[in-house]
Image 1 (spheres, rainbow, N blue to C red):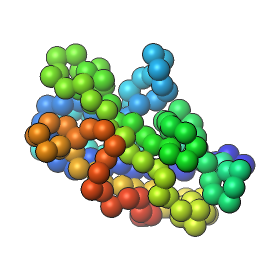
Image 2: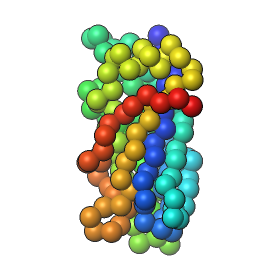
Image 3: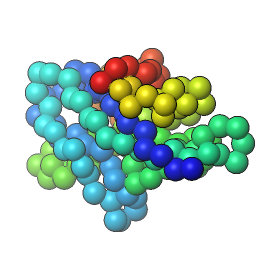
Image 4: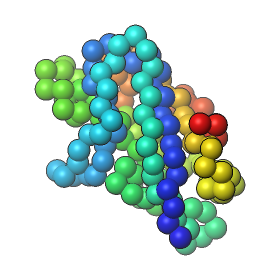
Length: 146
């Protein structure tokens, strides 16, 4: 079984005038999709990832937007020059972990197309620039209505 799972990432209060986007692919063959320039508002990214039965009782997230080893999957948000904004002083990526999504949550969303898996992530780091590295201080993933 391989099915699509709808996800929404809300990047809260990122610093202004910086490009952000979702990384599709890896290595030298990646592209940044859903690119947005930050302003005064939160940025919202909606797309689908793939999920399939894992070798154990849990699910395995996969597809062109999912990175990392099986037990530590994540999504990259490309920032500044990494997102193609060549005049940006920032070259960063933000890792959003998928590891805490339960099998029960996956079953619920696959059974109901009106649900989406959502997370809210701080957009600004302590240095005032775009948040980067593995996201810290976020509430994880939650099911919400579309």
